[in-house]
Image (cartoon, rainbow, N blue to C red; front, side, top):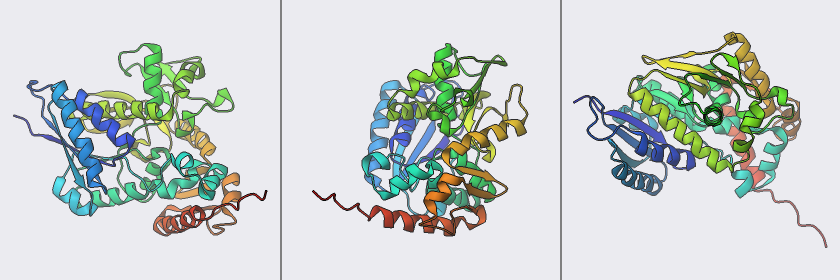
Length: 363
């Protein structure tokens, strides 16, 4: 019997749940020859939430007849937890800033994010990923970190901080899955997609949309191909992201050669077509140099209001203007080495703005 594989998933929200649900059905079948069973530990601050995820995924696995087990644990000290679990892959699906806050809890804070661009939340998106990356370095250096929280920007921030990250999930991986289905392809071996988090929404200029290649030749009409999927509720796209992430994890654990497109591979900004084999990851670019692909993603990322490069996060004019009244010392940007202090300042700002209610209109 081969050794058991271990995946740790941090988070109890929709992405973590979707990954676990898909793992329950995509894992190797019971009794499969040379297939090692997979152990999944779901970790979050709320023990009841992760216990519920593990319980219903165990039921799904039982129905599917797959060789996978699920356990839920409260996440305490990250370093101690990783020292004990020693997972092969650690998947971060939790951050200090929900992308759904603008819907469920609108406030002057969400108003600032709308004015500045989603990128202004980077310090809060990175909070948990930074802690997990630091814990890997301290306690489980063989563990590979896969980040699902704004990986197009968080992963290059981690790299600038000297912290380990293999790749991200979601974003370009979601778009690639949608294009694979639209093109009727059985897998993504013949498909390469260059795209950014900002491309989850259609760009104002269709000439700035996702780039895709099939068999090394450009795919035309990408905007039209993606239009039906972009019209889906974001929760359904999130489920696609989780399913694609589960497929990636199962293939990686099986030692398969994987061709896909992923955000933030090796700490790069944006999303790229990649090849994973023998424990390594490499870009798989048709007709573009790595430098050209990186520059393309940097340009695309400006739609989120930030630009990363040279170890610095720069806020673009709209974001700088929105931040100036609140954090003038950070309005133009900040250095990755100052992350901890920057995160604290953004937490304080968010707390203050959340507590500020607009005055009721006089009648």
